[in-house]
Image 1: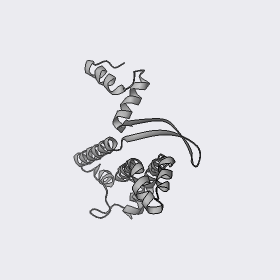
Image 2 (image 1 turned 90 degrees about the vertical axis):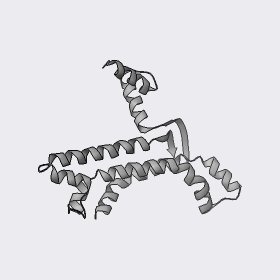
Image 3 (image 1 turned 60 degrees about the vertical axis):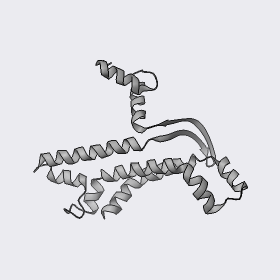
Length: 178
């Protein structure tokens, strides 16, 4: 029941990333492979899957992180049985009133896992305009990690130039909060 609940809740994260990953595969490359004789499973295995792998990996990371933090669906469908269906979030819920230290440490572990997921979920990002199925236009792309993107977006909100990470670091080093 725990696996079913977590899969149900986290699947949209993987599905969306997989859609974007597969949509980013240039059709020209697949067409060239077809001209060279590749078709069906060979085309998928040797061309499409490797080119979409970054999107699939990001989707797996994001869905895993969502599943680790799931609370509602797990307690509703699986309950909270120590050693059987208890997840980290349910542990925090159960010990919050009786053992605050355990709840804090479990929360810090989850926070650390979320940070690691944020770092590894980065990669090649493409912004695509989709007019209809099969009609895509690449508007922009970047190779960055998710944490770096967060710094860049924060810097942009503060009116700092791109890339924002070094500028934020300099401001933090000197203690300027503006």
